[in-house]
Image 1 (cartoon, rainbow, N blue to C red):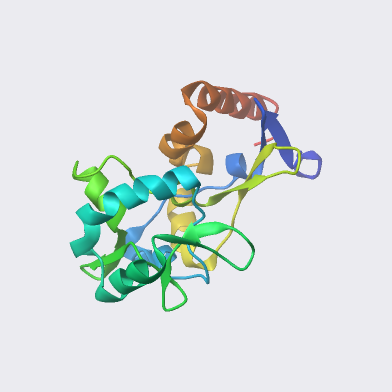
Image 2: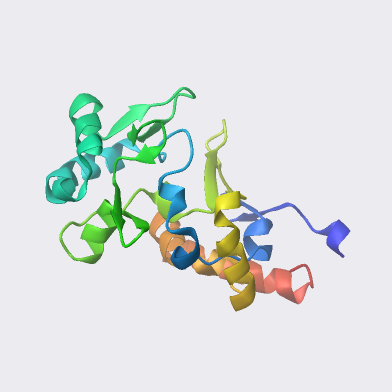
Length: 200
């Protein structure tokens, strides 16, 4: 049955990797300490609308940012175009997102922290919220969703397996935010059908 498992299915007008249904995931900050905010060689992908929302939020979160992050934002703004031509959040020292803040040995997103506290209306870039799902745009305008494996998230995979929590269920809130409640309902329907067929 595993050999005949399709690699991609279509949900509405979105192409979805089967791994999003198969793989298990649940962030474990106690284990990883928010390493995803400070690893990598580029910032988080953002849209122009998100950049505008972030710019509106900067003053509120300013004091939560490091002096180095403030200097980067003063110099180049909250986002830049990376070597691959993608618009991404600015970074410090070649890796840390400028909106990373440190508390109790963990890294947190200053934007999300302020949002959860009701201080701003913008949470964080959808690309961050959707991880470990990576969104790709096809040349014909179609959107695809892939599961991304990263060794810094091995604790999240272990916790997800322990809880038997599939990626798509873990990410219900950001997937709904990105594609809408009706689409997420279709995604759940697709999962039910795959389960009935014995494919997941």
